[in-house]
Image (cartoon, rainbow, N blue to C red; front, top):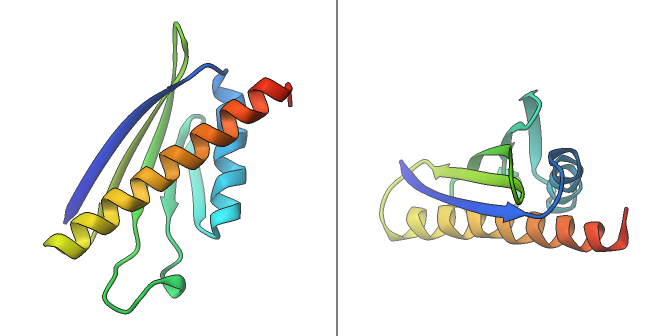
Length: 111
């Protein structure tokens, strides 16, 4: 199992970041389940991948902090080696970057 994780501090309330997560997951065509507030299980759509790639499975956790909301993404992909390692890193980076951009741009607009 190839794994990668990231933590990002966003200057918004957890509810605002949760909405951003929902929008981004929908835009990417991935699926998301929330077992409890601030915790998401996110899966990449396997039908959009090359045959040599397994889908990214990510656990995204939001936690309030003094500066806003800390978002931690823990991604994993079945498999090992350079292809799986690169794919999980790129998937985790994509989620972090897109959610961060969505959350901060919406926060500046007041939406």
